[in-house]
Image (cartoon, rainbow, N blue to C red; front, side):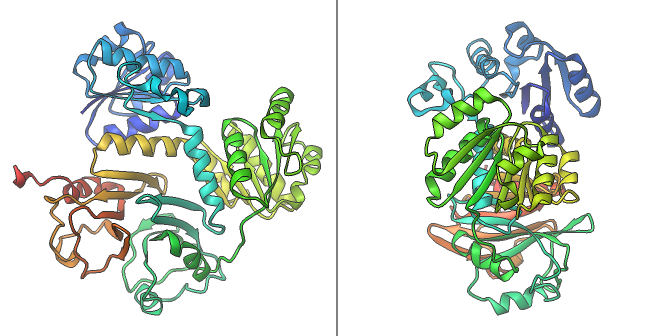
Length: 461
């Protein structure tokens, strides 16, 4: 496909890297020459300096022959106008826009994105997507990553195994025998920096970071088996009262009647507005100040927090404030980190869990870009692999054959199959049926093999 990306920031770079690696013809547009130069030198893409919403710039990018336009600049209005121009003047078939301002996304106004108006096929709201992921993580204490699939019927849990994990040293096949009624499959392991798919005779070791796919109703039992019996946090301190912090606070107040929140917001006017918006002064307090100020943190009682959430738009503030909260006595800490370098610092700083807003946005766009047979894509292990939900079509090569006979690539492991309301643990005897939602893990180099397994077979034509 020929794809135009407007915006060469972290999200634009992430999308360009993935889509170009998959053989697409990618052009990136940005007003900052240095960003364009960097992305052109690092990736196999064309770079153009200019405004992505200007017709002459889109013409230079050969928009008339483009299959998709992805607008992810920092300005919502530029993204929306770029999609409109791409449709009205160049007839680009598919248009995706990142929209951050929540006012545009309210139900009463969402008609603005319809074809007769702005003609946007997919609207990505990073703040909502990230906020939902934060709340999902909080619902499964002990998991460092949580990804839902199949309309939330299945879930992938990312768990770091510690020295006290009761299942380490036990072959996976034996664990399956111990819990025959548990729909759960360990699909990937990272050990000493190496990512691999475990076999039935392999044993898990302390220090392993694993992804295990299970039914949503079985997730807490799985965490218990892995040695995590933490209860949901109710006393929570949030650093950052921006779009993400505000969204998370509203959801927690709505969904956790016993929750008590303290929010630290650096700007006084924003803090006052947030306090008025949230109301419920008996359940939430909003403080004006820096989360890096020990006095402010003491006033917020970070030392007594069951969980400290760092949700500002500054990685350094998030990492350092979480480290400070943990040193003061907070039981757990979670942080937003938007760069790989920041993520690598999280564990040494005592941060239990982190979320990459860029990865959340990139995963949703990849899902849309790769076609309708994929319902979800979630990059993991620094893009070394992906968790995928794929729909099995009538013409898929895996249909009607037992998995042990389906010529499954070594770098692909199927975890669960969701068939209507039924959750099926994949074994060698399992047969995939048309319409099944298949939840799997694939190493990065096996993406084409996943497409081969689940796309319409060429023989069908």
